[in-house]
Length: 291
Picture: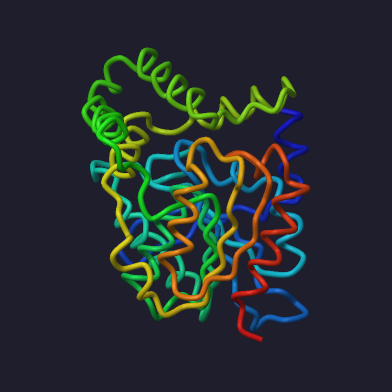
């Protein structure tokens, strides 16, 4: 598809790696920088319902000029995410990330997490602290559901997950409705891009995506995220209608001495406003990298 070819022209190549657990996984890996092979790699963790390419397609080129880039699709997301009987969990995604880092033999990484990927990044730094040199948390929070209505919505997604195996059309409409109601649709008004984005989202396993929605409702790092002993930067989105600015402010307040970069964009600013997001992302990555 022309849109995919255009958006992914600067993407790192795919490679299949064998993980310590015996599983295989396709990852995008640009390889060590020829000019600075010892520089920390940047691990990119994408958000809920999308995949690595949708989340990062407009960031790959700029990041790849200054760092080694490693990205993959989370469990059940995109066409390359893990399949199998294991139920989706954020902790499982964090452990998957640790396995990828080990399999690639990378000594130090800066972990960039976007929305749901920010929750995974926090858990990775907590569960595998020796692997993470720096954290960049984008459009994310310590909690994604606080009110009774929000918690109910996330529980409903988890409850409906098994039905997605039998009524996929109906369940996809539910996900689209939830996403659009919260301002998170990836459409940018370009028919080719929007068609490609829709195809990439639907290449994932819907029941796992719904399980992931339920897991986000249970996530709460507010009591421990401040104890993470790692340099952290926050890229906050001041016009976000999915992860509201007050949630991102609560994350900043809970962290220990974070560096803050504000982006006047909505939740999908990574694709709709890369001219604002990418420069902030580069500054955040530089801020947490050891000299």
